[in-house]
Image (tube, rainbow, N blue to C red; front, side, top):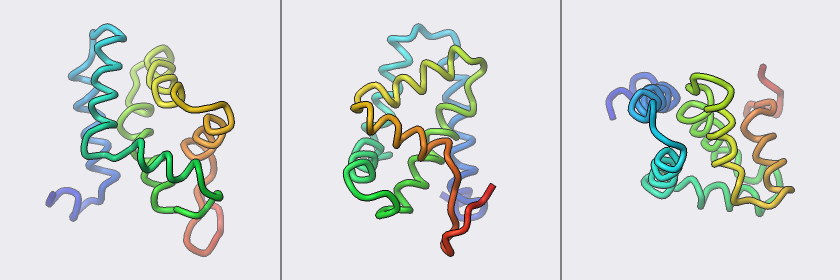
Length: 122
């Protein structure tokens, strides 16, 4: 908790992502999928937050959108060792959603980030 307070949750998620990828290295895809399901069903509340964001107007829940972006990228996607692994994690994230929601999730995860004043950050 002190790390989160001192460096921010992005740093904590990044460390968690590093740990996860070292931990699951060499696992079969079905085992990794169970790990993904356990993580998203646990304390992260990822499914509930995704559902709320995907079923309301864009920008209605900017904190949840940022959470989804940071959580998915720092824990699953950016720490992937190669394209195949990144594809596995991205497929796991997108698979349960209808096509319109998949497009919106991709935009949230990889699209531009807006600050509080509405200006786009890099």
